[in-house]
Image (cartoon, rainbow, N blue to C red; front, side, top):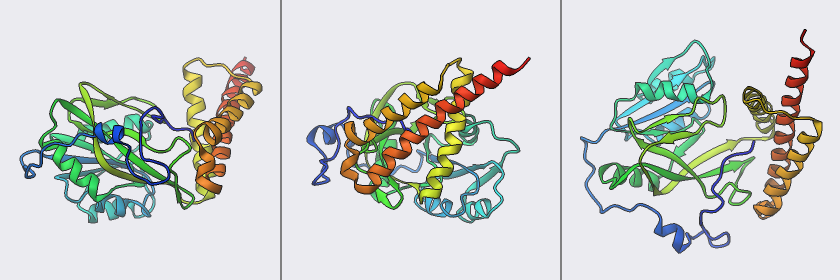
Amino acid sequence: MERQVFCQSPGRHWRTGRESPDYAANIHRPALTPYATRVRLSVIVITKNEEAAIGRCLASVTWADELIVVDSGSTDRTCDIARERGARVEITPDWPGFGAQKNRALDLATGDWVLSIDADEWVDDALRVAIRQAIVAPGEHSAFEVSRLSSYCGRYIRHSGWWPDLIVRLFKRGNARFSPALAHETLETTGSVGRIGGTLMHESFLDFEDVIDKMDRYSTLSARMLHERGRRAGLGTAVVHGLWAFIRTYFLRAGFLDGRQGFMLAVSNAEGAYYRYVKLWLLIERERAQP
């Protein structure tokens, strides 16, 4: 449930919603140039059972030159909807983890630039314009980070460490790969990283059932990753991490300004951290019990 954020980065004023001068100054704003069709953009998405979201996602990037969807065995209409939106759909028989699956999608891309988005994300109009300008006149940059605005149970979260959620998603093909992580993968880039305007919208959690489901799945994957790295934990470790996650989200990152959802988010972050280390502890105990 915890996510990587860039708290040190200036952002929008919490009351007015306007960008601070420092934040605005850091955004890459090339001179307006007609979109050059010779600069091709590929959009990559990985999916599984995303029929409720994939249509909106792909509709926001239909202006791209290539849409690639790599699916890991959906049992709903995800693949059909993606094909209807003009995407090339490839189905994989296994699930190697988020990082490795995204690299599979990246390997299929043929564009000069690549935009990686998740099925529950979509590009707003300002970001669309910023992307088109950036790939035509990138300057010294080979990748760009964007601001992502995420919703939690019906409310867009502008505090709690969720805004501005700066993430690198646009990059020149051949200059980046995803880390081979089961979860919480990162994009490893070479060269200079700039920043562009606009917003990547993200419907992170539809309802509380979604929160609980993702909390369980991601804490399991995270515990496995920690175990593979040789990390150790006990029940006390789980309690401390859970308590710290609540304090950091609700107080240090001003989650109380996000209303009731801010409190719910802080609690679910605490639970996610607690479950992650409890599951790690149980993995260690199971390993010790083996003859």
